[in-house]
Image (cartoon, rainbow, N blue to C red):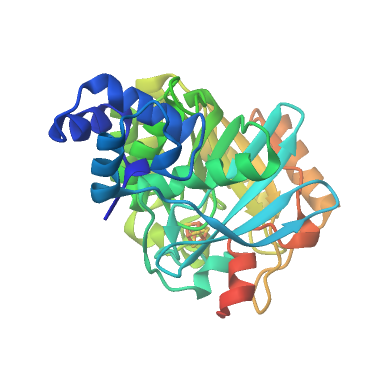
Length: 343
Ligand code: SF4
């Protein structure tokens, strides 16, 4: 049966029309699902019994069950959600001065195989549907009794490998008649699937685009991220420049520093050369040490030196605050503990 949360408002109007009902019914249902966050059709009290029956016969309402929740001393909460097909996904809630932000998963497992990622040992199972992506925010809002202001697509999965569903989820999140999370408060991160970056630019979605770069050197980047063998740094940067030209929006480059791998001044020099003159920002992340993983975290002293060197050479860089370190809040780690998996 189809999950009714998979539809954006325009699509839902079409669905409702097929059931022989007026489009305004779709707006009512959309509000029940994404504003009132009901768990059953019977709670939709301004919908006729007859239509409720038709809805029950044709759709289900996806509701996640919290299998596990971990809370960090800094307030970060990590959720493991159970899906209707026995799979599990994770999402992380982070508290910032500007509001509450949720890091969502976009796939069950991931095909990309980044060597520093805890999801690498978990095989790809399937894409999440739009409704399952959105449900992560709904379930967390219900759990905390508060509104989520920001969404980042940085959990398990490569969002641009599940592109259509991610774009549709953004439309649902973004709708003022639903969850009403502004596009500027949504950030999509990619390991660098170049054709989708061009498409994202052409769609001119007002979300922030974030690129997992991690090295300005093809040899080093390929050793960390197999995707670099398909789309190398030159192709990636060309697509990023197209995106900036088309949208006039700043790109955020993620750079996870691993000791003696990509954290020396020569690495910073290559990065400066690569990004010079681009409308961008570099987010430096202390790499998360993963059991059996081959990378170790760069020292804080070294990360500060790296940041200052970039800033002194015209590249805006900041160090991302580490949240939830005591609860393994890096992507994939909670799920990995439940399901096993090795790197
Ligand atoms: S870092 Fe992201 S894209 Fe890379 S393997 Fe992990 S989940 Fe996939």
